[in-house]
Each structure stands twice: as structure tokens, then as C-alpha cells.
Amino acid sequence: MSRSTSTLFVDLDVEVHPDFPLGPETWFGVGGRADILICPRSVEALGTLVRRCHENEIPLRVLGSGANLLVADDGVDGVVVRLNQPAFREVSYNASGAVEAMRAMAGADLARTLNETVRRGLSGLQQVAGIPASIGGALHMNAGGAFGSIGDGVHSVACLNERGEIVVYPASELSFEYRRTNLPAGVILWAAFNLQDDDPKRLRERVLEIFSYKKSTQPLADSSAGCTFKNPIDPATGERTSAGGLIDRAGLKGLRLGSAEVSTLHGNFLHIHPGGSASDLLRLIDQVRSRVASEFAIELSTEVAIWGRS
Ligand SMILES: Cc1cc2nc3c(=O)[nH]c(=O)nc-3n(C[C@H](O)[C@H](O)[C@H](O)COP(=O)(O)OP(=O)(O)OC[C@H]3O[C@@H](n4cnc5c(N)ncnc54)[C@H](O)[C@@H]3O)c2cc1C
Image (tube, rainbow, N blue to C red; front, side):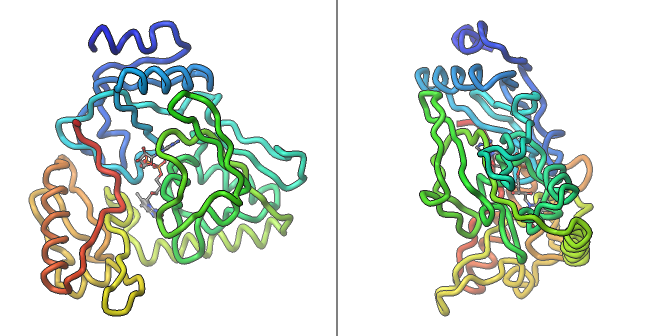
């Protein structure tokens, strides 16, 4: 850690982990180290860190649950921030005075938050059942699927700007589209959701239904990040088409390069065998993209975030 990096946080209420192995924190389970991982204990400390990184032109990345993240084998530079301290995992109800509003900090676990809403008989998050994520990570890419996405129930989202100040965006200023939002780059701090009263038993059944649909169609036990590619727009129809379907029709299911393999169950799930490497997966991603491009003249782009040295 350089002297200039340590001056970023020396006086802040943070936990510091130099040379931190990131691979085990991701669902792929591979990849190198962060030069430095910082876990702030307060919003104030996080805000100051964000501002200082910006002023010193030091890249700052946020690690959520690592379920949509591939870290290169030689790791990442700059600062990686993890929102895993209690201040960033809080979930409060009646947050804006409305009976049904819930506010979740970005580091809260999505599945636990969903379970608690179901227990309280509150509907509005069940569409994201079975998606591993932190609240911040789920919002960052509007996680969702056949049953809806996390953006559906959003009331407002708070982010930190580059000066470390909190900016709150009401839903009327936000757009949640297929795997993207118009939230500014940077740190998502919390989100408030509109939830409706519902029968807990019926909600639980709905969650189980969605979860078992996912289980029957996706290889959830493999070391993957879910879908590797976004569903692209087919230029012939102007409609979104299934990336998994294209990969399947190109005959790529089961294709293996070193430790990385295309799932035989779902063409868009690329996974890594134990003891594998990120570079094998990056080669496989390139190979799949070029085979789909030459077969269908459609460019696939990755849904998975890929981190490497700048
Ligand atoms: C088995 C499996 C099944 C999956 N199924 C689905 C599915 O059905 N639908 C779906 O959409 N996804 C699915 N995914 C992918 C993944 O669950 C989602 O993309 C999820 O939103 C990732 O959240 P995370 O907290 O793990 O983010 P991470 O993987 O930690 O990070 C992903 C990106 O989000 C950014 N980020 C994280 N937190 C913040 C924050 N607070 N502020 C700003 N940026 C932040 C990171 O910097 C990074 O760029 C699946 C993954 C797995 C492993």
C-alpha cells in the first residue's frame, strides 16, 4: 500500500484489509487480490473516502455479494469498498411515514430482506426470489427475470456523488430497464421500496414457486454468476432475443476451455470448475461471443461485471 493511499483513510472509521483475496468473495470463486479492501463503519466515513478517492484520481469499486462479478487473475488496483458493516445492512420499515414503505441500506442481503417482507405480509420484492445479491448490487443492474425486476417496487434511491454527498433520486426521475438503470456511476447507498399489504402465506407460496422455476431451469449449484451475457436485440426483428438460445443454437453448450465451461443445462450460464482461473473464463467468453457473432451476426455483451487493473 502506498503512502498516498494510506492517507485516504488513516483518520476514518473504517476496517482496512491490504492485499485482500477477492476470488473467494465472488460466486465464480476465482480471481486475484484487491490492493486494498476498505469496509467503512459509517456513512460519513464512506462519503469522505469517496471524495478523497475522487480528488486523488484513485479508482473506487464497490463489492456487493460478488454474484455478478469476475475478478481478473492479477487482481484490481485502487480501492475496493465493501458495505458489510452494520450501518450498511440496516433495513427499516415505515421509513417515510407510510405504513408500507421499507428502506434498505445497500449492503443488506436481498434474500434476507425479501424473507422479512414476506414474514411481515408485505408484497413488492417477491419477483426477485432466488437472485443472490446485495440491495446495492441488485439495483446497480436492475436484477430480475421472467417475474419482474427489483426496480418495479422502488420508491427512491440514494447515491453518493463524487464529493461524497448524498443525493436522493425519486422513482419519477429513475428508469429501470432490462439489466440497466439511469443511476449515476458511483456508490448506491440505500433504496426505499413501496410495498403492499398481502397474505404472508400466499406470498411465501409465490416465492417458492418462483424459486423452484429458477431451480428447474438454471444450474444454481455451479460456480457461475448466473447469466454471463445480456439478451441482445436481434437486428432482424428489433426484439430482444435469448442469449442462451443463441449459444445453444450455435452448438456451444458443454464447450470447455481449461477450467471454464458453458453449462449443458442453460447456454447463458458459464461456470468454472474448482481450482480454475478467471483467464480461462475470459477466453471462453471471447470464444462464445465470436462464435455467436459469426453464426448470427449478433454481438453479445457481458452482463457480468469484469474487474481488472486499470
Ligand atoms: C446462481 C445465480 C443466479 C442468478 N440469477 C440472476 C437472475 O435471475 N437475474 C439477475 O438479474 N441476476 C442474476 N444473477 C446475477 C446476480 O445475482 C445479480 O447481478 C446481482 O444483482 C448481483 O448483486 P451483487 O450484490 O452480488 O453485486 P456484485 O456482483 O458484488 O457487483 C456487481 C456490480 O454491481 C456493483 N455494485 C454492487 N454494489 C453496489 C453499490 N452499493 N453501489 C454501486 N455499485 C454497486 C459492483 O461494483 C459491480 O459492478 C445470478 C447470479 C447467480 C450466481
